[in-house]
Image (tube, rainbow over all chains, first blue to last red; front, side, top):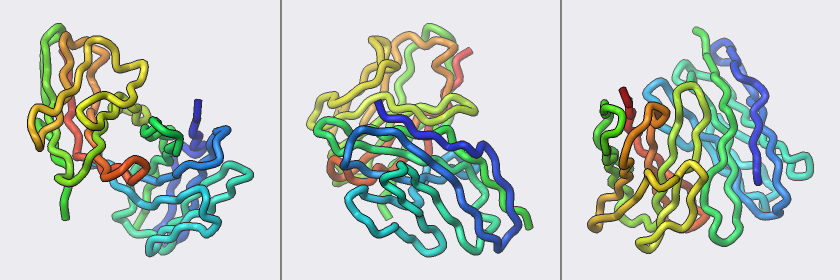
Amino acid sequence: AQTVTQSQPEMSVQEAETVTLSCTYDTSENNYYLFWYKQPPSRQMILVIRQEAYKQQNATENRFSVNFQKAAKSFSLKISDSQLGDTAMYFCAFMSQSPGAQKLVFGQGTRLTINP
Amino acid sequence: EPEVTQTPSHQVTQMGQEVILRCVPISNHLYFYWYRQILGQKVEFLVSFYNNEISEKSEIFDDQFSVERPDGSNFTLKIRSTKLEDSAMYFCASSGTRGDTQYFGPGTRLTVL
């Protein structure tokens, strides 16, 4: 079974700083997807970024980028020029590409606080 | 922009009662999911549904749970006899194809007293 581990329960940075959230996962599969979801105080789960394992290029969405290290099974999220609205719980998630497997497996989450 | 909607936003029920949580997935999506998040814990997969049948379910999804797509738009989760430990946030999600990004609804907070 796949597992996802986020080793930083909480992080706090000043507005405009860059912050990196860590995520490692365990799988024996070669093809899969990785995601970062954001959960603000409203508790809605919002997609931040997605990475396909077969792609060597790291995904980027505006101020958000990932560092995907397939051999190390690491998938960190970098937030540049952090904003107050980035304050949220961030979840790393894994999804297999195996037939019939559609579920997202989530990590425990990292609570990120952006201070003014 | 299309979005997943869920009703009610908060449901309070007595232990042993049946509850039905409702979701309207994004209209052209074909895959539907339920997840739950107990307060302070990670999000856990419950069930996935495609082509009018369950395609995958977790150990949590026991005989007390059922899902249904009663019409072309709604997707429901029924808990037959609620327990205290069913208190959680329940999220519905949908995706267009298998492997596509899952888009989540705002959640239903279920409180079992």
